[in-house]
Image 1 (tube, rainbow, N blue to C red):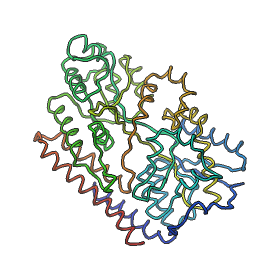
Image 2 (cartoon, helix red, strand yellow):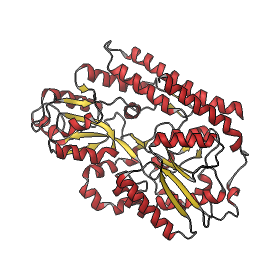
Image 3 (cartoon, rainbow, N blue to C red):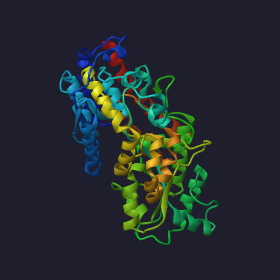
Image 4 (cartoon, one colour):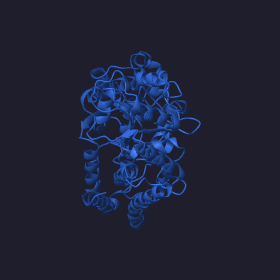
Length: 466
């Protein structure tokens, strides 16, 4: 993390901690907060980041809710820029005392954790399990378990500080036609998509020596074009049976056997010349579409863009599958921003929750999934997506993996940790020194130390003020 980034996050923490007295509450607060509260006539300001077709569909959902809800609640959905813009606006608003907070805000889990450092968010479980305002058990059970649990924060007494309206997932993109050619040529020993790291490496290395016959790009063939992103590092760790966070101890755990094995595996592929770097934004997507890259790993939200790249490029058959894994079943990295309810008034909080329930009901979820290309959060939403599945087989293939979801750590200060993870991940894999397991462990230990220092900084500042 560079000095400017460190200074920014230190500033954010400082102003939030200074703001804490304005939000201090009794530890005994419970659902009685909502006794007698009436959301009728409330206005819910919703800060979001959606643009284009997604924003158009969101506005339609909002309009439908405004016209049909029994309380006369009015939602005003306001685009406030990107995730970073919204985070900066929320933190400065909290620091100013919280008088201008929205009633609903888009937030990644680590961002929600930062807001909760000053007790700025509602524990949604108080509303979710309320006899008057909650969802029945069968409706709660309809949410994909991995999605439903991602907004529960162990470091904040297992409070639910967000609620999921949609999710994305890390998937492996692959060229089906190229894999078939490799199999027919005897260059690989399996058919279809690789399911294990060994098969993945086998095909990626074979692709370098056996270019795709339909390639239209002038680039040299690459087996796996790797992006050095913190979510990629987490995804490969999950695939090797581990995690980057120890939830029992409440600390980061980058230097573990699974992460060392995963990074060693990728470094070995790089040493063999089976991987390639990405030198421009979406360069892996472009090369994949042109038939010069066999595999990429990235977000399922890129599905329509990969589809366009293939149509404009080599026009081959392609799909997505689980990240190759050593575990008995896949372990898929699920992520995406949730919506959080800032602490304003009991009436405003209930009104926001009423919209969240509408936003996440089965019918709305089917509509939102098709317009946004995100995954719905309700399992029964699949019933309304049969035609969409038929028209988008790659989306349907990814949907089948949702039950295997696992999330990255929902802790404050994860943003600078992500930046550092990206740097160290790239340094290890691209090292000219051909690091052994011990050298990789040392690098990951440095990352772990940095990450836990950031986490300690966040939590100690709060505990000192309590």
